[in-house]
Length: 376
Image 1 (spheres, helix red, strand yellow):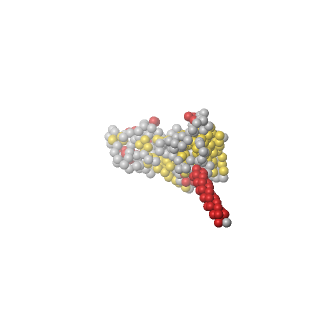
Image 2 (cartoon, rainbow, N blue to C red):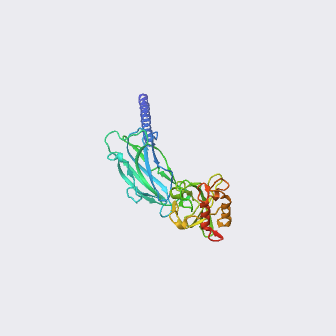
Image 3 (tube, rainbow, N blue to C red):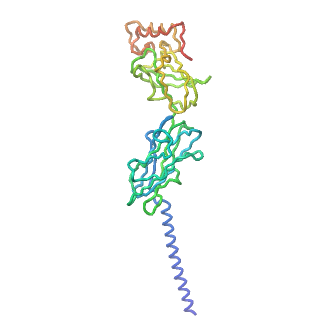
């Protein structure tokens, strides 16, 4: 009986040891599986890049998708890119390189042709989000694909249709649907996804001519007014330099009119005095007519219309040409010719650096009555 009890005790101990061993082994296997599923180290990255950060209406924006496996061998990837939109059309739409709609908008890096396949390539709207789904497979025999730096997978294109609220749109990766999978023992190693924010600007650029100025290199700043009913919105340019034919343009530094709502406005332009520079106001304000200002980049060339040339002779900057302006010019015109200084610069109507008979003649050409008034 005692021997039987000893046998049972020994058997129970052996059984307990076996159970503990199996439990430890199973727990170890479970933890190993769990570690692999959690993304060991999370070493791979994916990011977006653009050549600029700021864009205007109708711009086509190439967006490059790059990845880095940090030396790990991979076989496949999948990404879902998403951004918010409101209204129709959306502020940004996914297009081809020419700006047309495309059912397969993601363009594989040409260097990967014959190596990577793109089985999923589609864009669609869902709620207030636009999504781009892309997957890439590397069906090449061997260890798989690896990189130690950012590699261009491909490019997609966005067309700017409208300025979003706040002026910015952020492209992000959906964390649940974005993965980079290893070649052997496939598991996700994607660690970080970098969002990309695009700024959409609302700008106004113009070209204009001033009577008497016909050569490049002259300096002028301008006041710009946008009128809508009784509302008037004013903007100032910096000092601009005339180009060929004396045309002034702010194309290289357009006005930021982000505060201006999309609408139809009457635009008025006048040259402006800027102390400390050679810019002096001596032309009448000119009405450029009614123009439609959509959100985004707006460019208007008024220089080719002879009816929109700013008239010269307003030397005292009151938007009138009267006998007072003529008298001011004649007060300075005491020799053949008179050099310009900061005191008399506004009387140099044609901005050639001298006060001469040409300046007198230009002012007189517009003095058709006792008071010639600029546009209001």
